[in-house]
Each structure stands twice: as structure tokens, then as C-alpha cells.
Figure 1 (cartoon, rainbow, N blue to C red):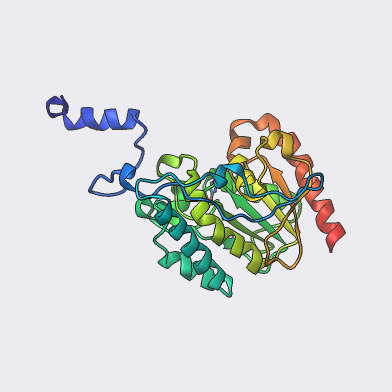
Figure 2 (cartoon, rainbow, N blue to C red):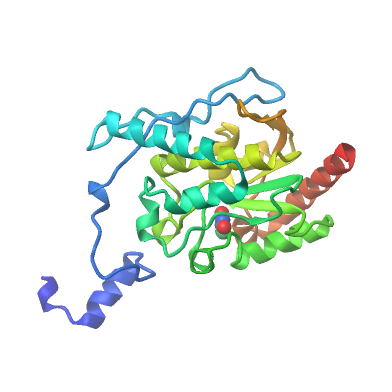
Amino acid sequence: MIENLSTAEILRWQLEAGVDETIGNEPINHFNEVAPVKAPIVAVKTESSAPKARSQAVADRPRTQQGPAVAEKLLHDACEIAAAAKSVDELKRALADYDGCALKKTATNLVFGDGNPRAKVVLIGEGPGAEEDRMGLPFVGPSGQLLDKMLASIGLDREQVYISNTVFWRPPGNRTPTTAETALCLPFVERLMELIDPEILITLGGPATKAMLAETAGVGRLRGKWFTYSTPKLSRPVQATAMFHPAYLLRSPAHKREAWRDLLMIRDKLDELT
Ligand code: URA
């Protein structure tokens, strides 16, 4: 019985169960929260295949305790709010006021993006980690430091790129964002792409690649190729490519060799486009 345990024992048990941070005084029952919604259907075309809907992961039908109608409404609202933003700053303000995504409740800060809103290159990662949540900026922890080095190796810095994520708040315990969380943030990510209108999109890691490029294969198979990313309001399709996530490269440095090749491919494409 938990009543018989000392505070130290309870804390040890929580640590072993994966609780790595205190986020509030009251427990939150996430089972009572809103859940999966149907994703916006936006055509994405690869070089080699016909247009298809966004990733299966975000295209599942809603299955929520509050019912599909509520989930559809949430998604509809997210699309409308995102579409109304006329600048990157407006989009950031709209997201700061947006309460539809359950991740906001457990996060400390909104992690919207960093870099130059007129950049030619946009990088999209998976979701903020603990350090990003604390600072309110993407990729400022160890994987961010590696990302900065990777960009520097092809002559880029944060003034020449824009960096954001598929979700704008830290998933508790750094878990992968759920289908519902991704689907509700995706209209904002898409609007971000439309407002920046970059030449190149780089997705970092599997979840970002799945959400943005509607590709379900692993990054190991998708990397080193060019795809196109489109939304109805983008002026033209954006050249897109997938790379290993820097956090993965920190864990598996042997793959840095492939990442280096990918960076050179991106440098060549940038030179070609400018
Ligand atoms: N990993 C991500 O995917 N995004 C961040 O912002 C930080 C780490």
C-alpha cells in the first residue's frame, strides 16, 4: 500500500516509472482529455508518386471520449485560427492564445520557433524537450548544439534558417507526440510554411518526416532524396528532404557520415536555387 511508503520511496518509484520533472501540484488524468482527431487532408507529392493525403499517422478517424464531433470541431478551429494569421508574429500570438492542444497544459512555455522568418531553409523537428520547454526556444539542448554545428558545416546559422517542430509544447517525459497532438498542431506548422515560403524544408527524424511528408518509411530509407511539400496556399511546391534527428546522431554517431552527405546535398541544392 502506498500509505506505507516513505516520501523517498514514493519518489524513487516515480523516477523508475519515468517521472523526470515536476509540472504541477495537482495530478492530471490525461485519459479524460481530448484525443485523436482527423487530420487536415493536404496533398503532398513525392517525385516518384502521385499526390496523396498527409501521413496515415495523422489521418486516423477520431476516437474520443467526447466524440468525433468535438474532435472535428477542434481541428476545424485550429485550421481557421492558423489560416487567419497574416504574419509569423501573428501566428505565434495565435498559438499563445490557443488552448486546443492538451500538451499546453503540461508545458512550461510555448516553443514556437527560432530563426529568420524570411529564411530559405526551414527545419522541422519532433517536439520540444526539457531545455526547450524551459527556454521557450527550439533545439537549445544537446541536440540543438549538434544541429547548430551541422548547419555551420554548410555555412548556415540561425539567421539563415527557421527552426520549429511538429508540436509546439513539450510532450511530458519527452514521449513522441500523439496523433491527436500532431494533428492539432499541424495546421499551424503548415501556416508557418506558407508564411515563410522557404525554398527548402528539412524534416528531422521520423515523426517530423511522417507528419510533414506523409511518408511512413524510416528516415534511413528516405534520407538522401528530394520530395516536394505543398499546401494549397504555398506559392509553389517546396523542395523537401529528411535527415536523421540530431538526438539520434548523438546516440548513434556512426550515422553522422550519412548526415554529412545529406548536408552536402542540401548545400548543393541551395547553391542551385540561388
Ligand atoms: N528535439 C526536437 O525534435 N525539437 C527540439 O526543439 C528539441 C529537441
